[in-house]
Length: 131
Image: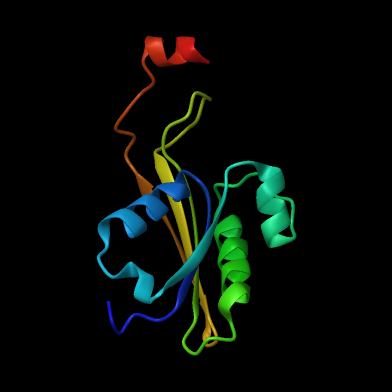
């Protein structure tokens, strides 16, 4: 943890779960974690990134979130902007598995990847009734 670079996180949708894991389960996180943006609504994410996206759970969205996160701390040596967005549970019809898109931006460049996991959970009738 002591050698971790300064980090700012931009996340949307279920990507916000990462913030819970980072801040609640990593000891010494305050040494490198500078802050975060968590946008669940498209309009809030557009304010943070400067771009209105039709869908938030995409590789492009994670890249924009990472660029905006990096912009918040770019002046710090070794700064890293992390963008993460995910779609894990939904009440809408969806094809395929659970999706997660990650992007890192540093002064040296950008990296992004997308992950798909088998769907492990379907909505139950009770959960649907809550909608």
